[in-house]
Image 1 (tube, one colour):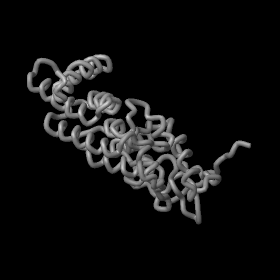
Image 2 (cartoon, rainbow, N blue to C red):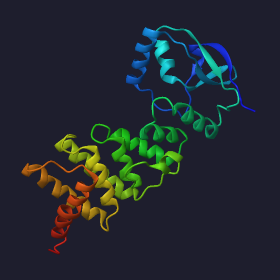
Image 3 (cartoon, rainbow, N blue to C red):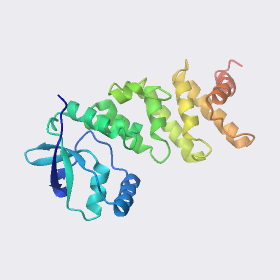
Image 4 (cartoon, rainbow, N blue to C red):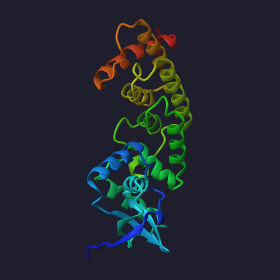
Length: 252
């Protein structure tokens, strides 16, 4: 049997947010406001229900846009087969229902699992927020899980740190470097590749220092920008950073 939602008109002030959803993006909300003002609102919001209260499962950006436009009630699809108190039931529904809308970013997955009180996600979210002025969420995530792209385990709720103590050291180092040189000279793509290669080296602390020194030399000489392609960066790391590392170790 396919479950079919019942339709009802619900006052906006009775619709509450729910844990497991992503943060509201102001820019995405404003896009909906402009669209609704121009075209009207011809859809509905997906909500769960408990004790005569409603909880937004899909459509929180439209909900916020409608509220700010002065709308006081809105058509809703009542998803009454979802237990809004069961996080493991609510979260997959939210992610799947939103998948066709604005694509979930890494920070959305981190925030959602942090809402579940998974300590590694709570800590990772705190680090993303702490370094938001210097590092992209993707860089922070790579520093902790050692995955360059995709992050399938993280998205499944199975985040595993490579080495938390070292990752704390590396994230502070990269953040300070960007604060000094700026995001244009040290773009996220370069930093993600650096983190990935450092974490997969035989001496992460040593290679962090070597990467920092090699980067300073690259940026101060002004001959070439930092390489940012996968192949070009790998070549630079395996040569320039490796040579710097050997000098530090007094092998060469």
